[in-house]
Every structure is written in C-alpha cells, then in structure tokens.
Image 1 (cartoon, rainbow over the protein chains, first blue to last red):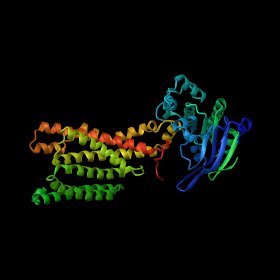
Image 2 (cartoon, rainbow over the protein chains, first blue to last red):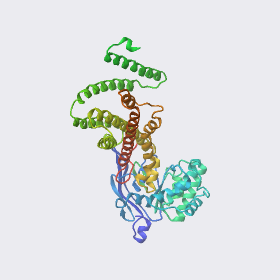
Image 3 (tube, rainbow over the protein chains, first blue to last red):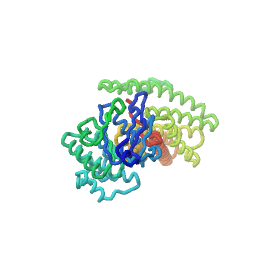
Image 4 (tube, rainbow over the protein chains, first blue to last red):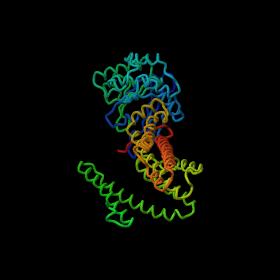
Length: 224
Length: 262
C-alpha cells in the first residue's frame, strides 16, 4: 500500500493485481502487484529482458494481460474505452516515433484523435515548456535526437494525461541530450503533479528521477 | 520463320511456346549470373501457366456450347483460385485467404454483375467468361499488391502505429497512411494502363475485334470500357482487401496484433 492510501484511504491512481502476460509459453510478466499513488513518481529498474517494457505496455493496454487486473482510481481499466484509457495513461517511448510533418502537426495529433483542436498558443506554450520555442513549423525530419524526444514529450502531454509512463526515455540519446531530457522530464512531472512510472535500466537515473524504486527480474518485481 | 518449319496450328503453337520459354529461361540465366535467383519461381510458373491455359482452352471449347448458367460456377471457381494466389502475398495476415476472396469477389463481382445487368458485358458465356476472367485476374493482381503492401507497411511501422495508439487514436486514424499506400500500390498498374491506353499499349481485345470485322471505333471504345471495368474492379478489390486487413490487424481493445514474425 502506498503512502497516500495509508494517509487518506483514497484509491491509488494506478494499481495492478497479480498481473501476468505469457506469450507462446514465455512468461514476460509474472504476478506483478503494485500501486502508485496520485502524483507519485516510481521507477522500475532491471536488466534487459527482465520484463520492464512488457509491464509498461500492459499498463496502457497496448498489450493484453493474460491474468490479473489493472485499475485506475479503483476502476478496472477494461471498463474504459481503449482510446480514453490511453489518453488518461500517456506514454513516452524509448524512440520518439514522430509522424512525418511539422512539430505543430505532431502536437495536434493526440487532441485531434479525441475530436479537439490544439490552439496555436497552447502548442507554442508546450514547446516553450520543453525548451523548443519557435519550433512549431519545423519539419520533424530535421530535428536532432534530443529535440525529437522533447517534441515526443510535448506530444504526450498535449492530451493532458493523468499518468505518464516513461519507457527508457533517454536511452537512445547521447550523454548531453540524456541529461537535458532527464532534467526536463523531472521539471514537467513536478510542475504538473503527474503520476509517473519510469522504466530504466540505469539505477542512478532511477534514483535521480523517482522517489520509489522497484527492481524487476525475470518478469517479477523482486524488490521494492 | 517458325511457320516455314511447322505446318499445323498446334505444332506451330508448341514451337512458339518453346521459343518463348527459352526466352524466359535466358532471363533466369542472366539473373543467376548476377546472383539474382528466379529459377524455381520461373520454371514452376512457366509449366503451370502453360498447362493451365491449354486446359482452360480445352474446357472453354466444351463450355461455350453449354447452357449460360454455367458461367456463374466457372467465375466462382476462378475467384477462389485467384484468392488462393493473391493470399500468398499476405502471409502472416490472419484470414488472408478469406480477405483475398472477399476482396476479389467484391471487386470483380460488383463490376461483372452491374455491367452484365446493364448489358455492357454480353451475358452469353462466350463473352462473359473471357471478359469476367480478365476482370477477376486484374482484381487478383491488385489485391495481391495491396495485401503485400499493407502487410509490409504494418510490420515495418509498428513504432509509429503504437505511438498513435498510445495517444488514444483509433486504429482507423493510425492506419490511414498505410491503407492509402496499399490502395495506391494496388491501383498503380491500372492507372498506368489507363494512361498508356492506345499510345504504349494496343490491347489484344481491341485488335482481335478489329481483325474479326468489328467497327474499329466501336472496338476502341469497347476496349476503353473493358479497361475502365478493370480499373473499377481493381479499385474495389484494393480497398476491400486493405480495409479488411486493417480490421484484422487490431484486437477489439485496439491493440496491434499484425507484426513481423521472428
């Protein structure tokens, strides 16, 4: 049980119970039970192949659990339409995967998927927040790796998620860009009071970014 | 030159087929010298194609003298065979044969039925089967191209697709550029055919009609009609195949399930 539950008895923002995923006889995630309080930042570390990314993909239902449940504020996430669920549980992947076009078009993609228009002022504010003022009309094919990841972060935040999942968000970047993105993510999480689950193989990064760290091995939470 | 050495039409035909096969085998040889291997596919396709077309010729002679209702089952059999051929380009796609069948039957079926009903295609078997087979074959080619393209688009763009899904976008929105690419790929040969009609390409049907004594202008217009029908059936087939693959690429929970197999 997390600190907030203990204090005020409210439901955790994100909770899993006995969550597992088995594919073709291979266990990727095994019996994971965890909870993350509202506004809490939790890191999951572990070696490559330990199931960190597989676990994260279950939390926004990009993959289907073969057993167990996930709940958001106490509600089973299977009761929530997939599109709405993923709006509430945003994700920043290891690589930015920006869609061809301009930075502004990428930022507008998520809101458009929900029938909304991202105002230009809001797009400019988002870019200001991620350290890319004046980049709205830049073509994404001309961005550096660090810039692209900043745009991907702004794109994830444009749908105003309640929870943000970060999957090795700096591992594809060089050292200078890595530290910059890490600082930026910490600032954004802090300023927006986001509930956040970070997956990283880098224990030092986990310690810098999160208040609580869990170790994952062979698909299981080994230590927390 | 061959006609000097072979008297009968069958002997001459066989000689012409042998010469053509030798030409195809020269391509195989040249390609092999450049480390491009076409041996098996070419030999199998040549032998199979020759046997099939000779058998079809023999069957048509019998069919053309039969009742006109026989056209229906013949066209259905052609559609099943076309679906089996096209679905080979969609390995890894769940229900590839059914998708091909629905695509070809839908595309070719709509056009053949509508045009026969309107009297554009003569309902006599001697006309319906050859024109129908052209339409089905064209749908098969377009379906195969669309299926191959959409499969490769999905399997090579998993990261982008899941980036869209992770933002809460619906599969239809996320897949739109890949469906567009697949439908276009299926249609490119047909668009080029229309563009080149009469300039680069004088089709056999038109030439045959003129040789058989039809009015050349009517033969030309009818050829345009046939190419237009082929275009329409190919378009329907590409669209149906691509949209059906899109439907099957995702689970009911909007999870991408069409992936490259390791």
